[in-house]
Length: 83
Image (cartoon, rainbow, N blue to C red; front, side):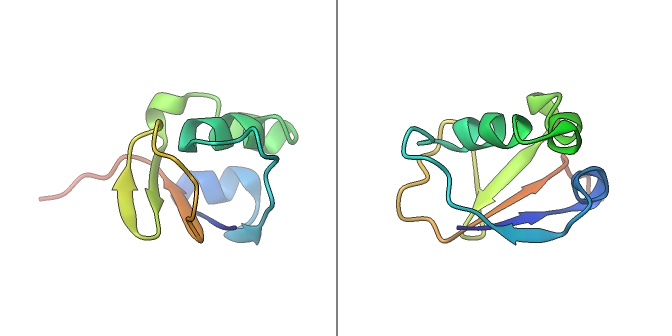
């Protein structure tokens, strides 16, 4: 699975994207964020407040309980504002 990081998530993790293969027990977007947070201190810092991280699966905004099954790409980003 391709993972993209945007804005301060990218800055905290130190990369814009990566290919990962999460373990089978990682079933949802929230599970994935939790699993990533356990990788090292940079990921833990980036995902320290799950309320501040949004996600999109295959370019569609999703909630943390969205299932990962079949997804090819996930993007993590901070909340957006517009005007």
